[in-house]
Image (cartoon, rainbow, N blue to C red):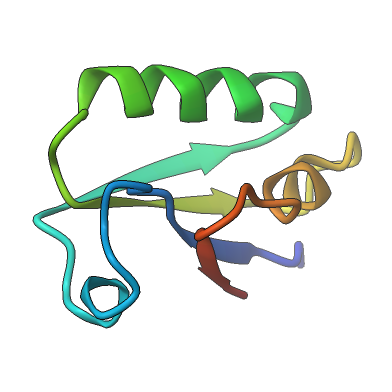
Length: 83
């Protein structure tokens, strides 16, 4: 049996601290496996595409041996995550 990890990131940097507790307008769920190098790329692409939208991304990782889950953990300022 594999270990599945779910990481939730609120990466809408245009939200205030008070708004961080509120539900986002959009949730993007990304299943991942061996996608370590793509984590920062997808975050950058989502930020650009969703500018002005309160959103979050949830990475669902199936215990990638390349460390995908670890790549999703170092977050930029004002980013909230739960594991």
